[in-house]
Amino acid sequence: MRFIFLTVLFSGLLSASFAATDSLIIKGRIQNLNGRLYRQASFINFSRNNILQPQSELSKQAPLEPDGSFRVSLPILFPQEEIYLDYGGKAFATFLGSPGTVEISFNGDSIGKAKKLFFFAGVNADANNQYPLYVEAENKLAESGKTMLAVTVTSPKDLLGPNFFKNFWQKGTTEAKAVVNAREQLRLSALQNITQKAILSPVLFQWIKSVTDEEGLQLLYEHALGTDYVVSKDLLDSLKRLQGTPLTGQRVIWANRFGNYADILVENRKMSNPSMVNSLPVRLMASLIRNNATNLSADERRHLEQITENGLAEKSELDFLNKLFAKNEMVLNLLFNYERESRIYSDIFDSTATEFLKVRYLAKNLYKFTYPEQLLLSKHIQSRTATDQFKKSLDEIVALEVRDSADIRRLVDFRGLKTDPVEALPGYWLAASNDRGTAWFDRVLEGYRGKTVYLAKWNIEDGKSRDELDFIPSLQASLPEDIVFMYIHLPNEGAGTSETLLKQYIVRHKLKGVHLLMNNDQMMDLLFRLNPLDAATFSLIRPNGKFALKKASPPSEREKTIQAILQAGK
Image (cartoon, rainbow, N blue to C red; front, side, top):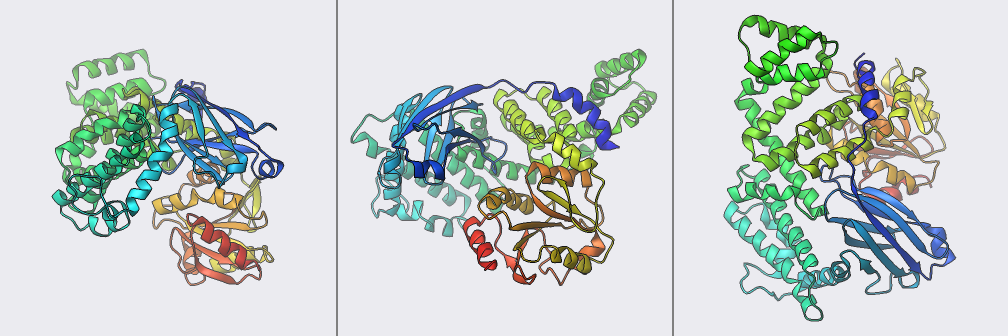
């Protein structure tokens, strides 16, 4: 009922256009593109970041013409953004994009050979051409026993190499801040290498300073997460940078670490002040009901407007609000829960951090909501947020979430579940059974005898499961088509998982393969057969039906997992 009811709202919301964005035009040519290269990779992949989702890059492919030329347009939400080029896993580049045109050229014969492969023209050309020189200088500095700093607390290797993290987490707050500052200065000093041969691009300087500064902020938030959760005022003040430019991969990582830190503070506030969690100002409740309840009479609307303006005068008005809430409980619960959380944000943090956390609320919880609910919440959050870049970032994420809505609806409406897997959508096989777990699993497995099976045990509520399963589509693309990907969703103890949300997640995240929808009793029966029976664990089964590995490497360890799967099939 909940899903059907909100689908009515969804049909109206979907017609609304997403926020307009500026565009970056990327064009250029691969010189000396031969037939072998073209057959291996007939397009160039360009990716960019969204500040709300560190685990995903937004990609677009630029098809190659026979002469090696290419052209593609990417949306730009910030005035400057890092862009990442990947040509067939053979050539990579990072460059800075802005609204306008970037031209890129490189020689196909020089891939893997040339010290400097890419040449840039157009917007940010000087910065983009000098960036590889900076990366080279920083890498050399990391291996050097000498330092360019006038004062340092340790050697360059200890600041930029793996030794930095061996001791960092054990340091006190003051000492941790000192070594982070020294690391920032050392990384920035690598720019001096460029000034020996050319005039340093001011754009490059600002770009690298942003990256080094925000890596330092990330590290200090991680240090606070591992110690006493206390951060200094200047660290809190730094959050004003979140809406600034450029948007880099490092900015997204730092924003995510701050979000993790904020989550802990919010939960602590909820435990210490439960009354705040369960209440909202009366005027706000009346306003939310007035703007979102359906079939309000003219008298009810006037009464709500009076309460919005004056607050409560008597108990009968509270009964009036409760009555209207009960009529629209599914929609209003979404909005009330968001507003309760939002109040805690503003109680703890300044305006910029609060604005970021408001839009992050939906981005981090997308898996909990059906796509009509996602659109409803997004529209409401947009109305409560003033920062343009954050609003556009949320627009972009939600648009990606609902683009598969037709397939999601088909899978949700599918009623042909059987004991043996049935193809409910092309590439998506579902099965459910009342049999004992071990007997059912063995029966399904017997149907795939002769094929290698990679088994994923997961739970939608488990963050590690979600992170790992994001790597599944790229893993599948790198393996022969006859490899079977099988998924067992481990039920939650007590409360069951919404089948609608489960099916939505499967389609949205392209988890193609065989999905066994198990209940608690079946899972317990499989405890020894599939040990470890924990979320975010993986197993590998040979074509003869026997386990090659009961604890196989996860999808995130891509190369290792590919080799293990191929080896199991021999």
